[in-house]
Length: 317
Image (cartoon, rainbow, N blue to C red):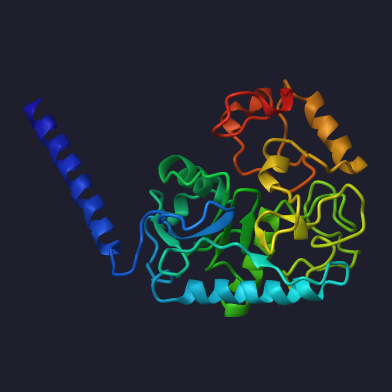
């Protein structure tokens, strides 16, 4: 018995040592392990440099590579929004999270799972880790990751959280990282809503036989940004863009709280009615009118629409 206790003690000691050693090697000048104090209480997008437990640290958060891509992304947004023919002619960009020193606030995160342990769609592991372990759950923020490993897709995002997988096939160049990030950021805004001209129901993307741009293969943005459909959200009305329009929409309200507010397009109301009718049953992720709410609590999903941080069934409200 004493022998077993000694072995258990040594294993625990080794585990603590290994954890501290890993953490120590990640500590580098200019690196932050937590979201820094906000300089504004406005809506904003926070960025993480995220690694698996066994990922190589290429220091993209402290060598300036992430900031270079992200600042260029906002320059692309300014040009694309100003040139959108259905828009109001005003150049807009995303509201990024900045530190008090004027630099982008980028958090370094190393997960507790090795790359091979992550599921096929790694966001299903990443997002709960960010929300439950790292405390990244401010509903006035979008948490967006530059994950330095590969995954089945180049990027993946919904309302609340998103990720660009830096080592995925096709993401090797600066331009691809830029465009994938821009495309996925559209999804964090709820786009595309299925009432937007050309968007496939429950998919969030344009139909292959319909013209349109979502910044995934070029530097233009189409009807997801602005259109003439009454009662249908336009991305130029998002709270995450600046200059912000009067009476903007919050994608969290739409996708997570099922509160459409002023938006009453028949396609949206029809899908919302279907969700409400299934309030006591499992509501699948593809039953939606926008991109997915990434706050969904799937552990309670058998009997309604539940999200982290809210006790009651949203679909039963």
